[in-house]
Image (cartoon, helix red, strand yellow):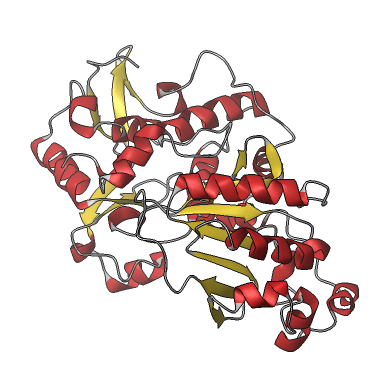
Length: 376
């Protein structure tokens, strides 16, 4: 599609504000706490799903619907959101005497060069070839991809399922160098995570929340925790967390460190890779390799404001991917699917080759905006 084409709101959707939606509908969507000014794009046909839109974009679309106008150049008003809305069929463009929508709005000339050993690509293709799933089910499948099976043998290896057994297995229940270092951090224990927070974090920050994932096999967690403690003794971090139960220790993202500066995150990653380079890794989908290191990967949490106020990096990204994948379920083959998928994810500011936000998206996050927000 070329700038200057006429664009309209698709008749496949009808727009309403949250304030006008029924409580039963909001409860069914799991959006009972959403501010009244947000909008809902409700399906007028069975082939589409409900979409949430920001107050600014809702106001703009309401104007388009009420006046019956078409847009001659949506990018001037909507910015990056125009590509996403055209691809998803929310907007339609006039071409060859008819209204069109869908993936051809963004398709590139060639299929991207992908690493088919990347666990993210593997997860997406496995989900595509599996049974039909709703977008919510797809997101859950993608987020949990790679989790090891829970078994009695694993419980016996850990020494039991009590918190005391886990602490003993981790090697943090008796005096040691690891215990001495961690004692300086504030510990909170939950069912899924044990989290240590720096009692006096540095005020130096680049405005983002950077995450470093230590992707070792579950059996290597005690060694990894000891190495993390050594790194924390020399690199500025704000917190780290480790699986809080024998079952949680089987998830691929079982050990995560948090930083307020990218430089600190990268330094810690290099130090940990040197210490754990011979340790078997447990591949983690939808995170970026740090300098090509598969055992150490990173991500960045979306800002805790407005449209992206919910979820971690991986949960936000898996929800984003699931929605795109569900919309492309009719693609004839994997090549076409990956071409369209890459184009749509790129329009959202995420590169399929690395699963990290583009510089543009980082700037938007840093300024408090997102591509979905539309005009301000």
